[in-house]
Amino acid sequence: MKRILTILVLTTALGACSQTEKGAAVGGLGGAAVGAAVANNPVQGAVVGGAVGAVAGALIGRASEPGRCRYRDRNGHTYVDRCPSGY
Image (cartoon, rainbow, N blue to C red; front, side, top):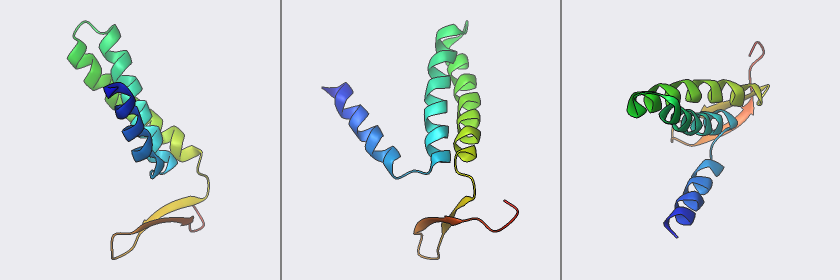
């Protein structure tokens, strides 16, 4: 039951994220899991794998949002709109 609740909370939280943020989160979690499984020191492997996975996931997620930029107004609200030319 705890596992299902955890998955539900994570899925709901990722629903409000951009593709870049989702890619970073999924890449970081996947990288941490793989790093911990294959390294001699599981903690160090998880840290390194998570960092590499997060960067790679963010780059992949950003590439899937061509021409879309994320903005934040003075009140802290975020929105996605077309990027200025050159992005």
